Length: 57
Image (cartoon, rainbow, N blue to C red; front, top):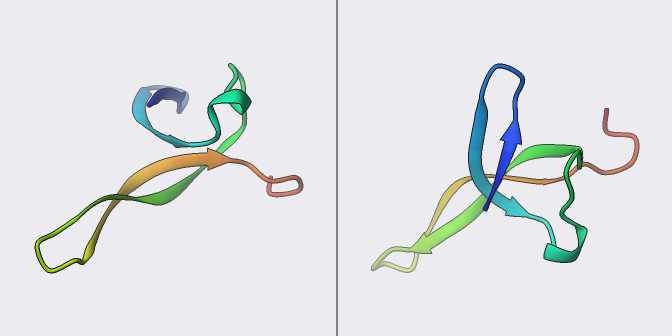
């Protein structure tokens, strides 16, 4: 979990980034991550942020 600055608002969200790579100012992109599996085994997704790859801007 971490805070992502979206300009006018800070969002607390899951970070799909290895702990050792997390730093203030890390460019991130919105993504989906698995929250849990329901009783049928279906993955329930939620939003999260991953590190931005080189050249994505």
